View (cartoon, rainbow, N blue to C red):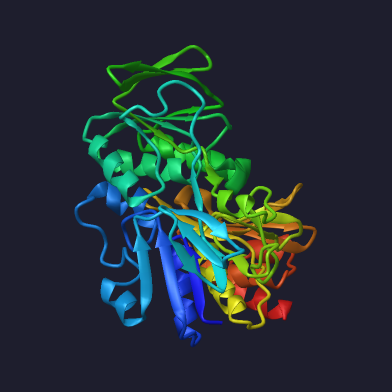
Length: 408
């Protein structure tokens, strides 16, 4: 094999080219990305970049420019991959140029899902997927600005916290009964909603949006499904992403709610692989899922790189993510099973606790709030399908390390 093309100059794409060189691949690597920026970290977009877009963190970019030159990575930035030309063996760029490749990795991620109503493309309506999105949003997050956030998943909740920090007046609209309820479950979603309320967010849970009222090209009011109106200076929409599957689909590669891959990250075409937010993969708990998490993008990209080089790979990990909001470090690993039994270690009122979600005796999900050391062991409990009683988990005198040891 002489050449590999990676489509997507993001976290997954960046980790993939890094892993290819670390594994000893000496052939040509082409990294193709629509953004003008070399691969960077996305978690700061909803925090540090909004707070001060002119001074991004030192570790914002995965590597400096010299690293890509030293490792002979052919960077094609600000360029769109138009098609996979599997007959010719490569990726067609805009203008028809063919980037030849023996193997192709699709790390195409997704685009922000838009609301289906007038005003969604107004100048003061923001979506957060890229560095440029964050820079534009930051210009509207001024002290005293009235900000409406539609959707309180991870992105919406983090932007709400950042906007409060910047002195904005924030109204959050969420059709579910609490923020991040699908990720945290109702009990801890309601806890998080109360934390936002106490810090000044005007929360409108169980409410939808009927319309956005536009004046002179800007949204000035958001109409809720109960007929109430919320005045605003800007709107942030965080209602999920649409996976970018078009390259695969147009090439005849099997897709569903993403590009379907096996445990070697291989698609239905033996020479095309996929990783990151766009990949629909085996779930650790059965079935298929797309994992929209930082860690999955990094880990799956590394697995895909090794698989492209012919190494033995069996990638299937439980989801793990974190979210920093206000003074809260929230981490979750695994999933919340139906009819889960919840056991708490610590005190929710202190905002320092760990929650365990069990199916029978098996621990299938772990939530930590400001207790990061617990998550270090918690992830291993999930991976080992460890069993424990409610009494063991709630007893602070029984260490998690001891429970892990019993799991073998």
